[in-house]
Image (cartoon, rainbow, N blue to C red; front, side, top):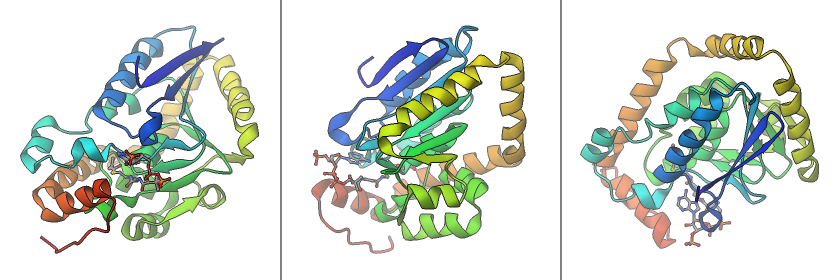
Length: 255
Ligand code: CAA
């Protein structure tokens, strides 16, 4: 595993994103490795909880802009880009996102695919894709709206602003906020508690809670992904991503 580090302590498996030079940007390799590593463990009766985490500086700063920047609409649609993340969302073992630093774009979406988000005070959440000339593509428009409501979701997704851990807790995105240095312990205790309960009941409980948000989600996600792909037919996508990589302000034209 190059970009994911897996550790097991008792019944808890931790997957740590490890692309330090790009703030854990999520490329296809991360998606493939994460799903490949966790899928067999999902079937292992000796595993009762997953923890997904990153570094002190970044949980994940988004999907990898470099990987996407030059793609066309046809390529995005043909690859069904991001569809593999559904394999992560579908894991039945409870997943805790342990977030310090940036959880932006795909990073925020990865955290939202987990069942609980526990955050250190340094955590920063946002869906800044609009600044790149695109929209969220791994569930942001659907899950964020379900979790925090239209008012906050529109604010974050349309302005691209970020929110700190306290605001994220107030609006219902985050389960708990603790001082950064306390996060690992807090997560370990929550994960150990979940992993200690009856496997069937735990899985039933998380599926039942998920169901409360699921109605219409499948259609919503497909719609979102196709729209995301379609934006790769625009000049603004190419300009927005190119500008980020060139470290300059984008010049959007509406084309
Ligand atoms: N993709 C690729 N590379 C990224 C990245 C990303 N999402 N985020 C950061 N990096 C890279 C930077 O390019 C930089 O690389 P170099 O050292 O080679 O220049 C390195 O990580 C460090 O980043 P910065 O120098 O920018 O660090 P900073 O502390 O000044 O800023 C930041 C941190 C505010 C998070 C800034 O990096 C940033 O804005 N990142 C992009 C955030 C973003 O737009 N995320 C959404 C991506 S699109 C998406 O996720 C679509 C979707 O719905 C799935």
